[in-house]
Image (tube, rainbow, N blue to C red):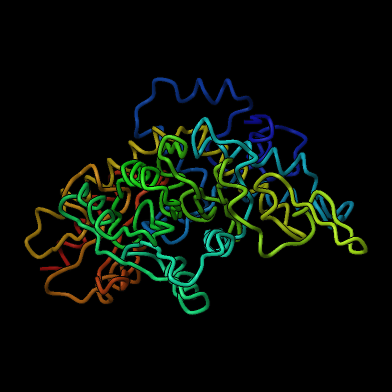
Length: 427
């Protein structure tokens, strides 16, 4: 992590282009570290909350939809755009791109290499790169769940329509999380080529047993892809240990990066299996239209193409460094603590039906519920429109429910507030 650049993006080091934000300010990294050493959790998370711009009377519980932007990221995007316009250029420098990837690699485990990462526009793009690049044949089978986001559902259905692949879909077990491995195993046949599902579902926030599924896939010689849109940025992840071959995520949710940024992980030994389909400048090492020669890059960079908005990816890098400065394990503990506070509060309300997993180990930073005597749309409208508590409706998989997401800018008194409002609304 380039901490000097990170502090400059906060406006905390003189000479930077960034505007100095309000709230906590520390001139050096040492001062910042000392300021949080030994302080209570409430003060720590208050300092984190000060780095976000949305109003203090607005409670934001929809990171699973889109993350709030830290001032550090906003400042970096603005500063980089201004700097680039001093001497406009159409492309980007490879060293800069590697620097960005190195800053993001820790989100996927200590063994993750910059060469295994491609910078994409969204998780959706990464998903399509995986499905297009595998070049599956008619009759090849893909196993997935019935609780996937449209970002995976549409590409899967499109491949069924265009290429004749067979989709095998199972309903996730919300009572016994480990049983999802057996559900997948029962669907495997000699035509199964790929298992592709979410790390954490967008519907109920279920954390699927990725490590066990990855082990099953490896034993059966089946490729394994994971949609990480709801997991990257919420907890430490080690993709090598999880036996994941392909992992697509977006920058604009839990990673708190700019919209139209994402990351695609391709395990190094699987790079030859995944063929680039949409290509352009930066995809290749060399080419010659006269001789017909074309040599792609030998890393995940072969899936990148064309002129990019470098300032957005610098913003993603800054958001990554911002979260790493807090600590991914600390973030997981904080988010899960709030989620469990909310889950346990809901469990005490007789008019509430909780749809998130029954087992704590398979729950995440998102809790989904519905009121037995109120419509889900009306409940969300009441919270978001009347009480300024932003939540998300969940029509996916026919759940017709409401989802609350908890991240670094949320605090326990906000959880108390939504519980109180739900109690009043239900009665």
